[in-house]
Length: 317
Image (cartoon, rainbow, N blue to C red; front, side, top):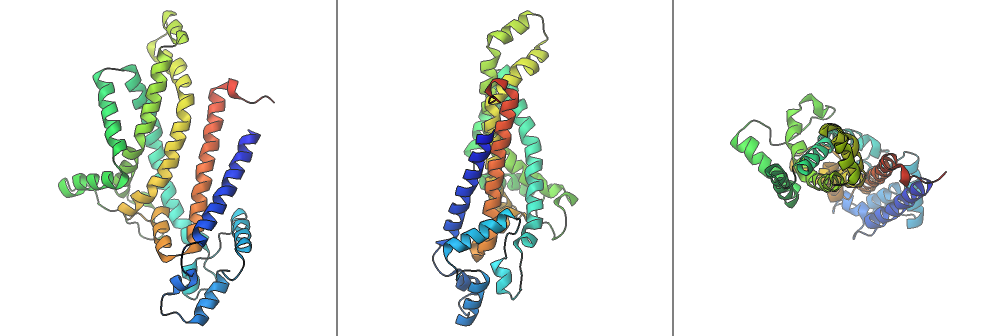
């Protein structure tokens, strides 16, 4: 596990370098872009000092990364340009982080059991109508991007049936859970776009496991089919599926950016799109780094689950 932790740390370090370089090499002066064309040279110079753009890139990077490690995400360029002495990024992104976390957790709570259940169902009835139906629906869902799925759902449930709101606008300071109907279409969009890979992997693992000798032996010993499926087949089929489910969750974080934009949901995705347009470097760097941390942590958790499911993969003490 030590090697995995080291690999995670190196991955995050590389990600931080790429994020910083990617935001630093954009054409144009960031302070000038934030202030607009009518800004005076004195105002631009003042904002450059507040944004530390007058320092060498290596100093800017080490200051930013050191602050991030200690929980200081720096200041928002937009806030500084509006005359604020301090415009902490944390204060700006705290509500969007909570909103995105709620959306991701609700989607994951449905996605994981549905992937396992539908994948196992397709495997048990392999080659039968139930298997064909699940496979066709999975292929159709994976072929459509989030904005298409979201638009189709809006067309059906708002334009045609008029039972659900087409946007998920949440007033500032209010929890998305205060009106759950606004979450239905965004969650459904993310679910439909993320289920397919998990279902297919679980199905493939279950089909292979159900043909194994120890499963046949368990059946011959008179064990019930339900016990054989969940005690023997599912556990061994889960190990190769865990990584795919983790990748689905990682992909879910990326899909949230598009889905939040489609439904005007006030989360990290919408904030990131706005910050990129406004050239708000502090927000863009911090949000991108937070997403990278989530990606790496999901990989670590997936590795740990695989080690628990397959003891022979555990490293010797």
